Length: 129
Image: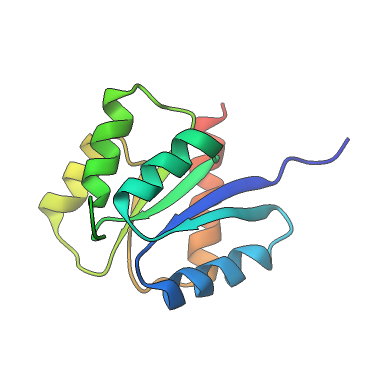
């Protein structure tokens, strides 16, 4: 029986950053990127459609931001996907809001591929128990 690969959605309006994250994830045989989105509305639609194991969501995106996505997922009681919030700025208030809305972890950009993969594995393990 084939081992389950962790299915990941990346939501970030910085396409070069998203591609860098994708390359890092794709280098790990236990993980795969199933979609990349660049705005909040498209991200919510893809999460609901694909139900990835993990969604890496930048909190600052056009159309609707990452906190809006978390609010919509909470309102829909959509718990199949573990969310890791990301941001280029560090704010205790915003990170706490993300956690309160259901994010499982908060990563401040930039971060290493090693750190990212460890957090993805930890969040995946915590939501699949």
